[in-house]
Amino acid sequence: MELSVTQENFTRALGNVGRVASSKAGLPILSNILLRTDGNRLLIAATNLEIASTHLIGAKIVTPGSITVPARLISDFVSSLPKGQVDLKVKDNHLHITSSSYSSIINGVASDEFPELPTIDESSTIQYSVNTADFKQAVSQTIITSSNDSTRPVLTGVYWHSFEGNLYLAATDGYRLSERRLVETKSDVAAIIPTPTLQEVLRTLSDDTTEVDVLFDETQVRFRVGDSEITSRLIDGNYPDYRQLIPDTSETNITMATSDFVRITKIAGLFARDSGGSVTLTADQEKKTLSIHSIASELGENTSSADAEVSHDGQVTLNSRYLSEALAAIEGDMVSFRFSGKLSPCVLTTKSDDVNYKHIIMPLKS
Image 1 (cartoon, rainbow, N blue to C red):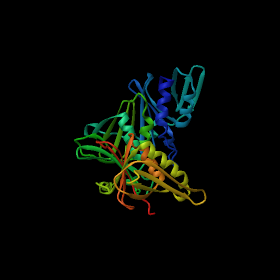
Image 2 (image 1 turned 45 degrees about the horizontal axis):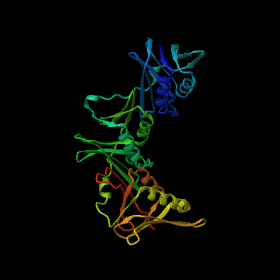
Image 3 (image 1 turned 120 degrees about the vertical axis):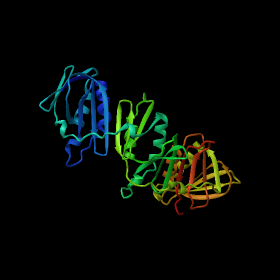
């Protein structure tokens, strides 16, 4: 193999795929990156057997071929080179890299030892093209409530599914739940995408990306972002019927400025660190306020209040970190917060006629 690429394109590609390279014990080849000519382009790829990431860049090909080299070494080396042309040449499983006055030889491994990259028959997939800003927002709003508990694998991902003509994303860890409506759909979709896969896609997005293509087959999902592709296995299993957890109506309905709610929650959280993050919210219809009370046995206590529209008096105890993360995920100047008594789920949404995001938090037993 012999070819030339630009340092800028090569660095960006190595950075994108290099994060996926794994140092799993027993499979040292997974810590390598695959370099392989593809027509008049260079394919850069890495996999950890769960996720595969590929990136294509333009290249001046002299001789086609392939090799795998240690991901960390080549990424760090190429990113340190000056901008300009980088020449690559393979001799006896050694990659010779030359750029300006810099020259290096990296010991590689034959590409036939590298795992086969996953393939998808695109003609039989369900496909969506999603605006990058909407994709980024929807994924960010839902991955925060996915679970880390490996004993319940279906909860460690985000559930992409069709419902009443729309594509929804949902995630829950058993203590809280988020749901985001994304796009209209005529297809039937029910797929659980691992959270690490979605995090990797978010990291791959750049400022000049306008759309993300999402392709589902029976067992895999592929995200196409410009010249990058990320392919992942789906999590096998049935997602719980989470919609039954979302109350249609509530006794206590509160509407207030998002910035005020964020501020009193943050202050209350300072005093709740030593009490498991527990804070008590009290809605007062007569005073038209929402107050948050927290106690730190050794440090003191705090009560913070803010003006609010309140339909009914009520009190509930929540985890302050969960509340802060929910408020950070909600777009809009005004927030709607509703609950019924001390034990029913609390629902947070933006105050809007067309609500596309819901965040549910289960109360703590006070």
